[in-house]
Image (cartoon, rainbow, N blue to C red; front, side):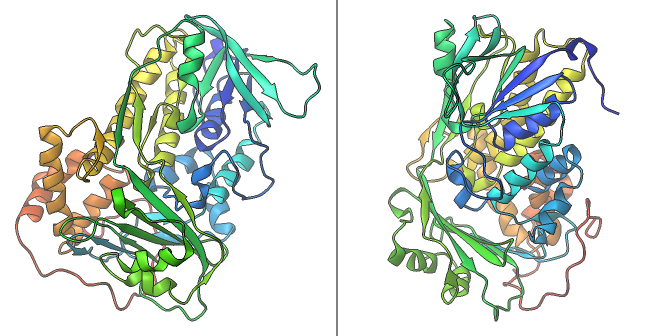
Length: 471
């Protein structure tokens, strides 16, 4: 049974943004406040369809293992809803052929289950399940233009609603406002209007670009893998590629590169770019597959975070979550997991005896610490790319990147090392686990020869929550 703070029972919360972060935040708030309003500027589709407010929805999305489990905890039955809609359930080390700059990673049944689903299906499923809460309402086609209140507290949000009569409310009252509008958040402008100084930002931009396309999976396709990730890096080409199966018998293929070697959206460039990856596996798979869409591209890949300091002069009942507070290079697939963990964290902060007073400091301090781990992993990797702008790598980050290269090399020889790496990558273990004595010894001492891409794969076992096979 969830702990409920009775001081909040008559409160009203407004969540700005109806994406994954906003929806999960609304779901958690519904356990603590009387009424939650989700304000979304898009008209929300009735099915799993892309929408304008999620420009990344046409690209591959990685819902990490911990993210999947966290959303399942908030929305029981979520995994079954995705797989029931046709999304494949895969084992992370058994079904994913993963090539790093040192070769193919070890293949073994890990018990780490993850679902390959398109972003539209994930968001639509979350939205459909969140809508069942009786105290959550949606205001679609409505744009928040500012905050009502002052530098100490907000009392609501100003809104503009398309297609509503002139007498539609120009503001919505709120005891708590959560900004979940993502990378395009206008919160800095809103704060300036209240006389507050926006929080400083840290940006690390690798100038990465990527291009994606959907294909129909050929009926005669036979391979010992179900998904493929080819990672670029020295001494090979820097470009990377992902092929993942989706619901509806489709593949999504996303190619990425930095600087002058970014992929284009031209039809004639896509397959040749894929052939330039460190291995031709993805190119060979799609060479005779039927394209289902055109090619979509994006260059919005910078890492960006707002640094909200304790005691900062800003409204104590205004919270930032998801990409509005901290967004990562999408290539690392951390966003949805971070959003889910942030929602759970908000529930913990609201369950305490303090209620709304001091909530901003409590929540942002803990959320910044939580996302700091994701940030360090993304920043360390991106700072290795030539031409990256922003905060230069620290000495510890440079050392960590060298050690991580050794970990990946060991993962081509040693399933145990690769398992720990995957668990860290999917937020199931802290990064310090990679430095544990047993893992460090297996990383630094040479073992048997490297793996090749598997030529045969037995029927996979049902992925579980933990793996003791290699302990």
